[in-house]
Image (cartoon, rainbow, N blue to C red):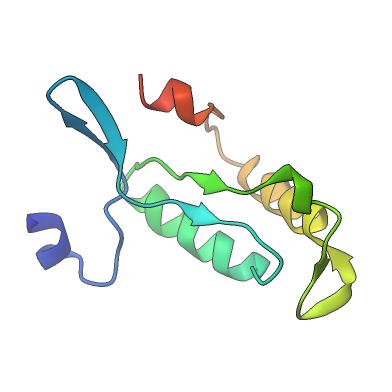
Length: 100
C-alpha cells in the first residue's frame, strides 16, 4: 500500500511472499496490440526499482500480425524487446523459478 501511495501510476514490481507461497501482482502482456515503446517504458519503470519484470505472452500468437501494422508479426516485437533489454546485465528466468 505504501508503494502505491509513494509511486502513483506504477505497478508494484516485486514478487509478494504470502505465508507458504509467492504471488505476482502485475505482468506485462505481449499480444498483437502491444507497441514496443510501451514494453520498453514499462521495463524501464520496473528497472528503476530493481524489480521483477514479467513479460507474458502465448507462443501460439508469435506469427500473428500486429493490429497497428500488418507488416510486423508479434515475434518481431518480442525479439526487438529482448535485444533492447540485453544491453543490461539482467537474468532471464521462468515464472516458475521467479516464484520459488
